[in-house]
Length: 466
Image (cartoon, rainbow, N blue to C red):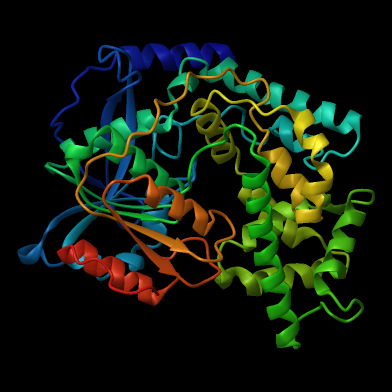
């Protein structure tokens, strides 16, 4: 049945009419607030007569039409998350910008309400989730690799025709079709995290179409060749964020379950989570082992506003209740999002990390973080069994109008070094340094929000860090 459904889906796409530049969008009210529309894009941009995909859009119209500047296109990151849903859930983020801009979010190919990659039936567990995601023994490591290969097989069975075309480069070309359909000569854009990476790739492919562009906490690139220093830097950033959380927790005293037994509260929690590797907790929906506990913690470290929920989850864990952390892990690994994230990352690069390199560097990885090291390292090897695309051409700094880069100094997900690297590889960019511990600045830092709004309104670059 799965194969038949995939065939029918493919035939449906082939039957779609072709016509991309200057499409007329049909906006309808949806999601309890925005207007929604779809735009057609080719499956293969190098073959315009190829089957057609549909990209979902959501729009909040400018509240002061007489002073309207144009359209601001936004992407919340990922890859794999739905920006359309995010815009509907949090329109208040754009109160000021929306006075003079239409705000338009889009779900990139493979994600959300666009032609989406969902490799299993509802309720069916992804193979990688059934494997130990912090494998220690050769047997566990072999099962992890086998699970990654099975993950590919499931996706290939249903979406083998789509997967080679889920590259960031293809999404950047889709973005230019969106720009054209919106009637804009140049793209005005705000992208967070992977959305920043996508914007950077757009500037490379369509430099002459770049307008005011903000890349907030951009990822430097997808899963790539194995570089131990880069891996350790990412692990250390996550550990630093966790240490900051535990210090904040203990300083509050009231409501903090940590610091009662061990002098180092991070070690105290680390020991509890290590024990879950051998004695997982039964919870509704499955069990909480060490890797799911780690993933649940990571989900709460994206921004400091989630720290109160993490304190409550840790309190529950220390009472023997793993449900809050388990639920957080499940939210982090939604089936559609995890499939699209993996497919995009694996399509973006020809590199495939040899698991034995991770085994060989195990001591350095654990020294960087006993809690997060193994999970981050093995997650970076997530393309096992996935065929490799040729990868992008060598980077040549594009000639664009001024681009605003934003980097948060203690970002646990995309390091400030990523923003610095991109700043060095864009020909015309300004880097706004933001002191903080959140992943992304716009919406988390008032100073950064004011600076970004000012740039998008009148092109003024920030004069000082935040």
